Length: 74
Image 1 (cartoon, helix red, strand yellow):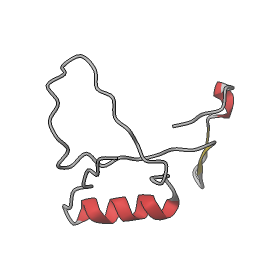
Image 2 (image 1 turned 90 degrees about the vertical axis):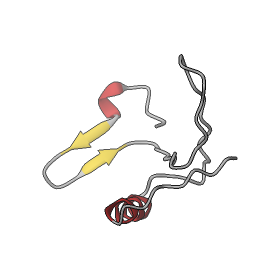
Image 3 (image 1 turned 60 degrees about the horizontal axis):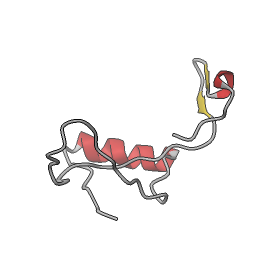
Image 4 (image 1 turned 135 degrees about the vertical axis):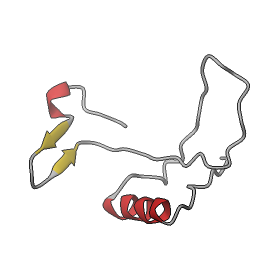
């Protein structure tokens, strides 16, 4: 997630809505190669993978159908 510098502006939550300010990205790791590094791992998230209401819905539908979010190396 890219978040505003002011922590108080990160999220706004109510019973009607959840607002996350700035931008979030997602990455599917299903079928990603296993790393032998046990201390840390760098992953690269494509900027095209913006977390939007539509992308969140598509992710939920895939997971509901027990489909993985297939890893694509960039």
